[in-house]
Amino acid sequence: MSGSETDDPTISEESVTEEEFATFVAESSTRTAVLTRLVDGPAPASEIAENRSASVAGTETNTASVSASSAENAAEELYDRGLVELLETDEMTAYCLTARGERVAFTLKEQGEI
View 1 (cartoon, rainbow, N blue to C red):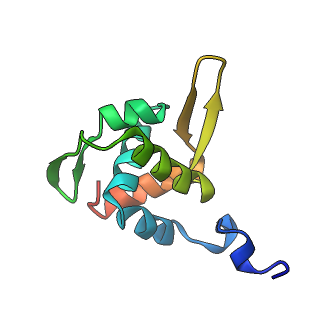
View 2 (tube, rainbow, N blue to C red; view 1 turned 135 degrees about the vertical axis):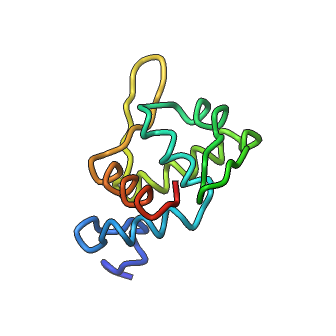
């Protein structure tokens, strides 16, 4: 397969709207919680997992049992779509929202998803 879409699982940022990204995020409670947590500022996956208690669709959901690897997988999915970026220091790697990620979080908030 040369140059086909299946060679690269990432999605072109230019071809997807914030509403489509918001739908993608909302399809997973883990992605929603990661995005919601990162609204408060950068965090490593382990911290996201420890503090993963979010209001999703207007109900309090306690999901503190999620593993750091689940949080990291969700953050990587958001990274692949340009919604988060990595901040790396000698001590740790943290995720933070991109401008597009902030717009998607705003869209989700307007839709009552977060």
